[in-house]
Structure formats: C-alpha cells, structure tokens
Length: 253
Image (cartoon, rainbow, N blue to C red; front, top):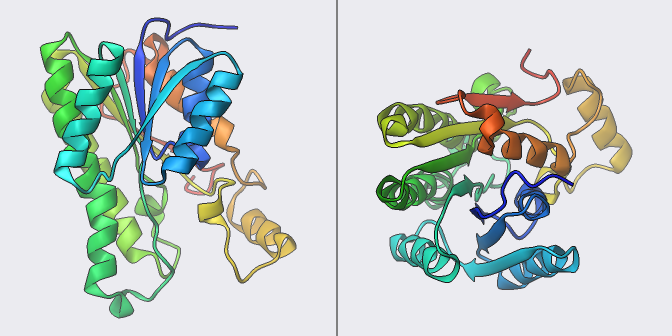
C-alpha cells in the first residue's frame, strides 16, 4: 500500500464512471481526499460509496463543466470542504454519435466543443487561479489519440476538440510552470468503457475490430489509464511538463 497523495486533495471530473471512476478510486487508495464531479449525481454517489467501502475519503458535487458558474462553485466547494486543491484531473468529455462531418448539426458540434474544450478551459482557468495563489499544483487533461491519427470516420468533431485540448494543454503548461503548476495531458486510445462500445456490434466483432487496430491486441483497462494519471500527478513525473502522453497499445506508433 503506497501513499503518494497523503494530505492531498484531488478533483476528478467525469468521475461517475469509466476512467474517471477508476482514477478517483486510485487516488483514494494512495491517500488523497477525492472530490468527484459530473452531471449524474447517482453515478457520483456510487463512486463515493466504492471509495468509502475501501476505507478512503471522498465527496461529490454535481457540475456541468460547460457552465462557468458550475465550475466556480465546484472549485470553491472543493477548497472550502477539504482545505485545498492539489491535483485536478479534467476528464469530463463527450464523443457524440458517429456521423459524417457534413451531417453534424450545429448543436451537436457546439456541445462537443463546449464540453471537451471550453469545459477544460473553464476548469483550468479556476484551478490555476487557486493553485497559483497557494503554491502550485498538478493538472492533467484527458485528450485522445484520435486527435493524432484522425482515422475513425464519423468523429471529426470529437477529434477536433481533443486536438485543440492537447494544444491548449501545452500552451498552459509553458505559461504556468513558473508558478509551480505542472500541466500535462493523456491521450487514451480504445478503453473498456461504455463510451467505447458500439451498439451495432457483438463482443466478438468488437474484439476483432480492436485486434485489427491495436497492436497490443486488446483494449485498455480503465485501471491502466488511472495508473498513468497517478504517475503524472506524482513527484515521480516532476520533470514532465506540457506533455500529451499517448496510451493506445501502439495504435499510433
């Protein structure tokens, strides 16, 4: 049992399921007090219950990262309830339904960019303000490997939003490292989450699709992504700044 985050407060958005839930659990196992946030309160409460069942400390707050006041209240409540904010994992995001780019409606395009890009910017804006005034911290954003290869038809809006987030991460990292704020991103490939499952394929078809596109021959487990987030957040990665770490089993190699 390690405790790299004893005495630290970690915020995880999109913490009600998938990568967010796995990462919230991992932070708690290593001593952090975890605030999980997202749009679905019942999912957030489930994450908190899982953490508490293991003896960890967690809290939750409903927040829509596309709304500036929600983000302000989230950061404020995290600090007021738990005494600070040391690590932020900005993981909230949406893919949208597969659709040819010319057929994507403006509302869907707007929602994807509002969540994946503007939401991350709003979170960083207020996380940075707190961390800058309190001696620094660590921020990790969830981008995606599709922003590198763009090979999945129907997800142009998602790819564009994540490519922009990767660039935003690097810009912010250069700007705020002087204030002791270390900012990086991760770019997962196919991960074993509900978001990655396609309704029109069987498990066998999915396995064949993955084997064809991922050299390692399988999807990533959410716990494997969480392990990488914790490494980036820890002192083990103290010299890693402005990096977008690809986690895709060799798909973009």
